[in-house]
Length: 274
Figure 1 (cartoon, one colour):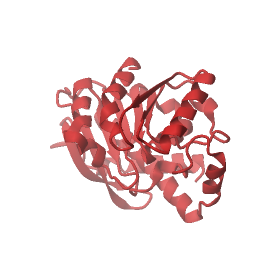
Figure 2 (cartoon, one colour):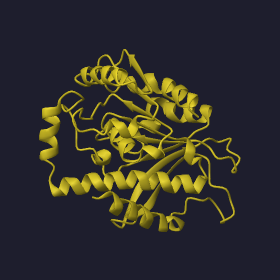
Figure 3 (cartoon, helix red, strand yellow):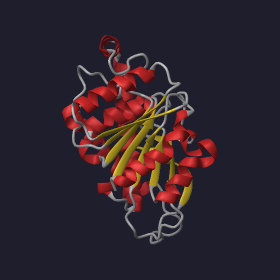
């Protein structure tokens, strides 16, 4: 899907925003706070898709809050990372004052537009080339719709809650980390900072690094996460050698277990760039 077509479809989805019914009560009422799980109409496919959000309960209905788009891993859904570890993500969002948007990505395996997956981590360019060459027209449609859906969900919630567009943050884990790298390069002007977790799914030979050079980047990894660990370490060396605005943080967890271990540091990193 070409970029111009994608932007046009986003505009089409935005036209459907009044039908979402996100606001509680009459039209003049402020949108509800706390944890919310609902469906909205995704216009390009005429589907009702699930969306999970969290809005700090102390929001006064007027302040323009920072907003975080969180992309889940493969096979998970819009609830998995919000509810995980006794709602740690929600607790941190409440503490730090962020709106969280957690979309499905159209399907649980949509991948947010990025065709790469294990073992095509950073440094495995031959494998990455094979995976790109194997993308069928049907898979390309799935990737494009997944990218479109998460951007649409972000736009809808940003508009509904009057979130601060200049403080829009992007994070994701595993497949969602691949989505972070993809969306960061596609829309670099949209993000204040990014935090990919345990998923270095970008190809050194083809990734447009110059597009993300201005972005603050916080890469996290678990020492028990193989084979992504070696890819993340290779990526760390590359970003440092090329003087990116970059921090790298390893914790003693496996691929899934590292997520709650790094969430506090991710919010601290975002706070430093608010």
